[in-house]
Length: 146
Length: 146
Length: 146
Length: 146
Image 1 (cartoon, rainbow over the protein chains, first blue to last red):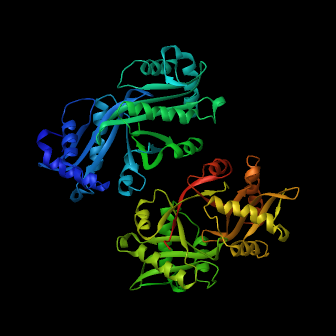
Image 2 (image 1 turned 180 degrees about the vertical axis):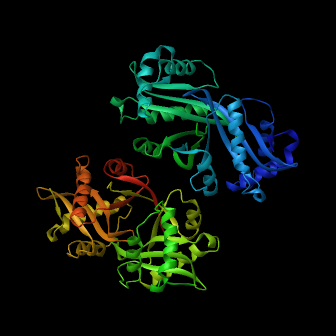
Image 3 (image 1 turned 90 degrees about the vertical axis):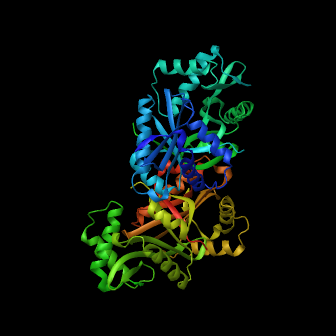
């Protein structure tokens, strides 16, 4: 069952999000990183991030975080899916696909159907899924050097 | 001189923005597209888009539009530079570079130093500049099929 | 056991090579395509293609085809690994990796250690392996339009 | 005028080829590198590299080197255009385009019409031309780590 993230999910949510951060090489995020992210996700602020989780009989097996933000080309804005993670033991069961589709549904309800995300060019397992549920654009990201 | 976009820039701003839209293949945007975009840019709403222009003795030779939006990994959020355009007759004079650097400065003033943008993989003239003032990331964009 | 392709492998070799051609969308190669390719592979001509197969008790589970060709930057030339295929029922057992490493060994014996190949950017399963046994270059291929 | 490389081109050919090697970061190739490459180019061996130059009243303004090599999917083989260079003072005059088209013509005469080359993903000036005279493929190159 996919449902919204709730305050009582704090501990299992962090275990999942730590796995996601580790995938990107961040193994030692301070506790405050998780505290702040979680507080924002459950704040109820419509302009900040929202969280969805895959809850299987009380166990969280996947998460996704998304936000709506302005886009000058679209009045209603766009929906940015920033984070997506499936617990290693639940891979291959459609969790990630289900979460993406749940974001699509939430975006439709919000009247902001244009959902996008970014992924590393060599995230092969991710891209196998993304090529089925979305369209690769020719756009690549440049970052200011900080 | 780079300065903020002002209400009296309406007509020359549209000429530039039409050139930018045409670069991406949008030759027939309705008038309402430009009306709405301009209204948002000069609205003074800190959470919506901001515009900067290169003003040379009253002639506008370039524009850029950017917005601050939430990012779950960074408390202060990020700055998305969505649009950047130099009038064809002013190419090669550093207009685009100056505008990017002005966005960097505005982002610093706002306390949101992480600036990013997306560009087509085959935007060769753009990437020649971007490789000098920013860092290509390995991230590519996927879009929901609408 | 990895060994050289032999004349008596004709039938099982074709079954594998048909699978490989189908992967690239070629489902209806004429019989002559396979006849000619096989004849070249077993011709003994050192300047034409060589074939290696993974033979498991008489069953062929994988193949690779490679050729040595001149390169102006290297006196000894280079080794181009053109084809690589594992039977679907034998995936995940190291067949492809073993075949690549056997080409490396053959190339070393021939005094032509520089082995390369090309693969589709979205060949995710292949690239998972290739990133482990080789290095992605920044080079992309352009073809004359015929 | 585009013509075949000749033994008497040795000195001006090397000046051009040094410029090309420097573009790829090779500033100190030993003399033997140029000796051997030139000897191969003018050897008359049909299976080794061929050279074409843009000769403007006795001054060489550009060069290209190509070779025919076997390909298992095509009986007649393929033509690999390995090197292409225009003298800096002759840029923008169609030298590179002319040389590519001369390789196409030579390949047609040889009965090997399939011409290809590899280029760095961020060779923007090159790709501006290549996108006009050829088709970018989705193929990327992997190299054995030596």
